[in-house]
Length: 145
Image (cartoon, rainbow, N blue to C red; front, top):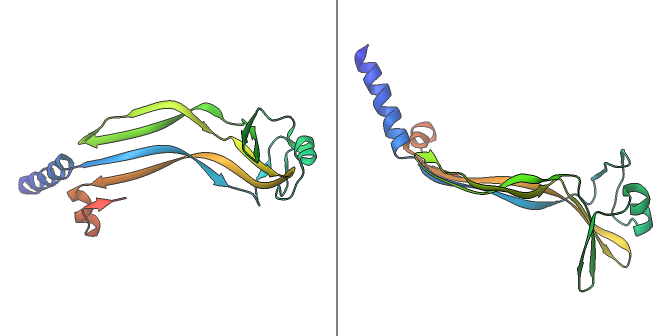
């Protein structure tokens, strides 16, 4: 019985001692042009092809605007500015280097000639790259991403 405990402890310590990797948490705009729901109106609505007047009627006045050359984008800040973004490297233990700076939940409408050509929803996504012998024992590879 003691030899099994020693074997389990040795395997776990070997697995944890060689664990290295990095996680990133970044803000991305997910294209939701065809199926974004109108949260302020409480109804489902297809925004592609909608006019500025229709968006104003359904969503109200935008919280901010983004203007680039011939692109006009309206931003509705449904989320909070306290979603955590950054990186988390780890060598045995994680070292979080994250700040509450992301705007998860914002909705953006991009207009061309006063008609919606794109609608996006801001989301925070995590991406991992981890290497440990434990993965090798489970599925035959040393790293996971």
